[in-house]
Image 1 (cartoon, rainbow, N blue to C red):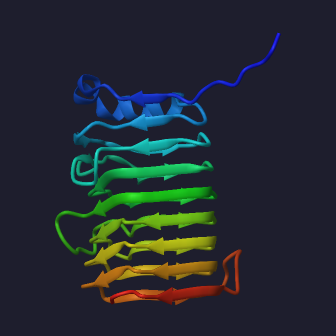
Image 2 (image 1 turned 90 degrees about the horizontal axis):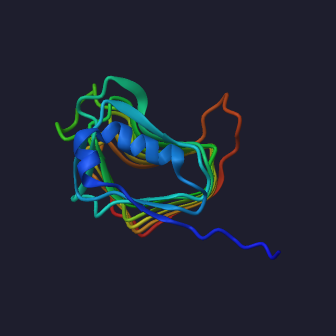
Length: 225
């Protein structure tokens, strides 16, 4: 008997189920998804009370656009992030994450993580009580941040730490303390971004006492800050 490969599925989340319980509907989808699958979020504003997590490899999570599909954490009661990713070969695309109590989207230890057409924002404007980081991949490799927006973080809008092989491009960071930061990282290209109305625009640095030291091969070009 010849073996066959299982084709990837496209899972469109049900609008009625999301209207009744967006928290359970989205988190169950992130738990039940199989490697290679795509989860499609419909347009709408979905109020969440707890952080979401994804630990399955090879998943795409896609909305209808950063102004159409909005995950709102204004009523968040628990969780340190809006979305925490700890798996590999992940694509996050075309949705927004708003008003998280902590970090908006964090990827920890991911290989091949893509943020594309994502908006993270604290809608009340700059405030020291806003979450610290917007897009926050750390200890990751092959990171792509493309055509994203980060607004209002109390520390950094886009922060890549202790990572390798990074591209941050075509993105905008406004009204954060720091717009874009590359910390203790290797092989990064930061180009064609706009970082304005921040306390600091684009920062490249090394901190002591971290597992990855001696950041190098970081190129910053064709940005507006």
